[in-house]
Length: 385
Ligand code: GDD
Ligand code: MN
Image 1 (cartoon, helix red, strand yellow):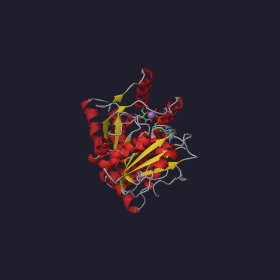
Image 2 (tube, protein in one colour):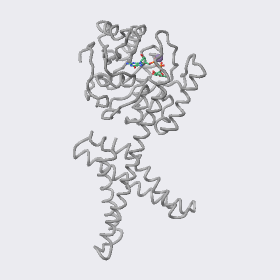
Image 3 (cartoon, rainbow, N blue to C red):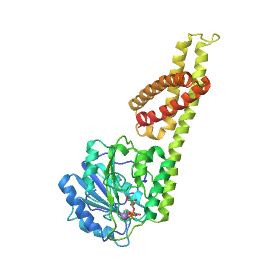
Image 4 (cartoon, protein in one colour):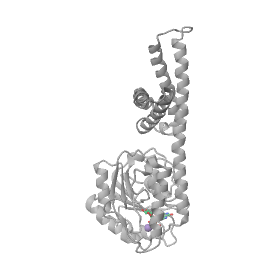
């Protein structure tokens, strides 16, 4: 796509990112009625990036057909700023989808977003870049670490912002607790961390979607002070709070659904294990020695579980990594994690039984529960990445 050309994407919002990434950084600026800010923000960002990574970046303005014609002003800047591209959307609307649309045409290895109203201090960009260069998969500008804050927020707005964070911690702790400022709309993520992942956020908070669905091992943060708006006005209304709650619930449901599927598959494994133990070791059938029979039965159960998980529980992820080799890789990882889980199971059973003096069946039940969590978590992070 040549710079400065309007582009309206027809692909579904959940579709993949392109694989090629000749540039280092793609910075998306979502805009809606930012006519008074667009020129200064483009100028400031270009100055900073021309110094730190000249020729290796692009700025992508994604405008939702603003009545004040922000898109037109942005387009008029493109002769002067060749790294600037402009997308004008007429059908779709909304901040989060604007960001994803921008990333879908982006050519950078690092994908980023910043508000176009100058409330996000542009200098922090270089710190965020440093975090990624140090190895972070996700680097966010945060109001709640050293050097961060808000300038003149009312008690009510502070309260609402913290309340939203608490709610996030309650509904989606494993994601929200990793982010000191989950509401931040100023961050960078490695393309490789979200490639192949479907992103379909509701409303304003794209960061939560990226943190929940991406392959995010390491998160870097840089403090920033949320500035007051100099021009134009905020688009936040009560609707964004409702959408935020919907978004949290939707993510909760989709992560929990996976876990329940994983548990059901685990139960099917118990049936397979029992069945083969009978077939192999029972005196009325093959009559093999017990230990040998159990090892074969357990291995068959692991393969059974792997197949169900690969086609069902994690089917969406597996389908994006096709091929026999890839499947074999996943099977080996799954196998190793489950065998480690088995050892853990025995250890935990002993600890609960001998150290805590629990009833042996309660001890085993607890051990199985913990090992299921172990298996789910490590397979989610390692096998179906
Ligand atoms: N394309 C597009 N479509 N852009 C939009 C839309 C939309 O529907 N709504 C807002 N924007 C753009 C704005 O023009 C601005 O550049 C940016 O998104 C942020 O919108 P604001 O309305 O200024 O948001 P805010 O300052 O109240 O809220 C911000 O709160 C967080 C901190 O709590 C968020 O936008 C976050 O980015 C910020 O960190
Ligand atoms: Mn703003």
